[in-house]
Image (cartoon, rainbow, N blue to C red; front, side):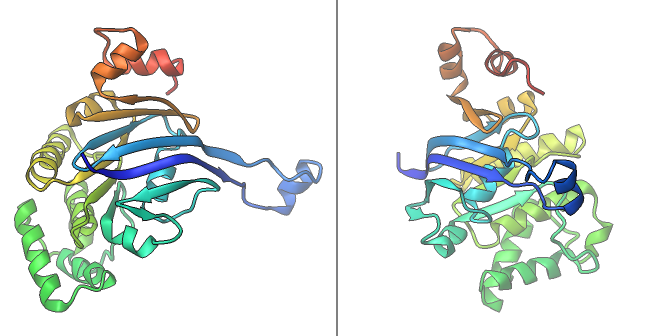
Length: 264
């Protein structure tokens, strides 16, 4: 299988925002930085589904932002689809689509179609190419409400458009940050099935998603990565994680608790 992602020794620190009152209260000592990722390494092959599991603050979103070129690591290296982060970022952007929950980058007074037209232009798609691609995506997602104002859409509808935006330039890798957050059970199940059956199985996309819900992760299947306080605690299929922890019948949640001490 061809490798599509290589992360080697990635470390990322975030310094707290500077404020004079905070500096004075700390005795003129600048607050220490927070380490979001700590020497993280992993390799992923094309067509895989990777679930990044961990509590809030584990470093899940930071990793997706690094892969999508939004931020750079302080240490280590990343190669996406053969391109080196920090050297070939425009080529990486062409290979990656990022969809986040609670999407706020849409223009709420425009229709769904108008938003997609705008994002297609951002990826330098010509008018004809954009129209064909948008038509294809609307049919793929079964959307018929594309000409209504975006602020009239339900959370589930907005999530569909967030996915369409991520797919507008037909990337090979889809990055999903808590894709079913705020969705009801039925909408969540529908979206997960669509990602598994259509995007992965039918269209061969590589999907990397974050979640702290173990049942959701198991439903997606594939490879699991357990992150805690920026460190990689485990990486592999469920059977591989069971073997690693010597828990042959354990659930993913039980493995997570064993490895992280029950972090929430």
